[in-house]
Structures are given as C-alpha cells and as structure tokens.
Length: 86
Image (cartoon, rainbow, N blue to C red):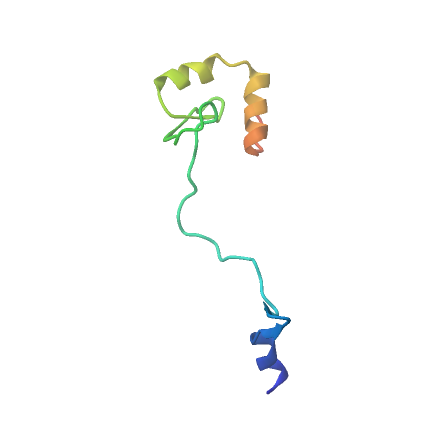
C-alpha cells in the first residue's frame, strides 16, 4: 500500500472507525437561497425596494413601510445584510 492510498482508507481502532483526510466543505449549490420574511418568518416572495426588507403579504408591507429607520437597520443587521438604508 502506498502513502496516497492510505490517505483514502479509514482504519479501525477500539471498535471505532476514524476517517483520515476528510473535509466538511461542500460544493456550492445551484439552487437559489430561500428568502423568509423579516417580520413573520414566512416564505417571502417580495422585497421592499426602499428598506430592503423581505415581506410575505400586503399587511407586512404596510408594517415594513411604517417602521422607523433604526428598526429597519436592526432587522437588516439580524439578517446579516450589509446594506446601508437611506
């Protein structure tokens, strides 16, 4: 057995299998990411152009439009969006 083939195989010690040289990195996905409402957490097909918040229906749209800018910035920060609202 060569060194390169030993890297691929796993070995058994004390009734446990230990894998060698594995990686948890996955290839990129081709599916678009799912978007959820910032207000309710429901699937959100819409985005407000002004505040960049996701919403799922007309009631949430009215809520998003009535939010002050500091609350909107807080929602964006929770989502991890690096967007400047203004």
